Image (cartoon, rainbow, N blue to C red; front, side):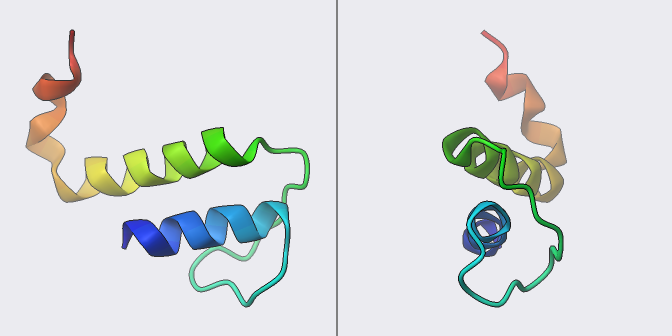
Length: 56
């Protein structure tokens, strides 16, 4: 799931391939930040009770 989120995120910035879940575009987005946020969102949804581990 995380890899699909990364794929769709990067493909929304530079459309090359068919998207799987997200159908928007945003050519102005930063690719590294967008991919990191996509993975974070997937992991937060899959493991909702692990948010205490991220607090420093």
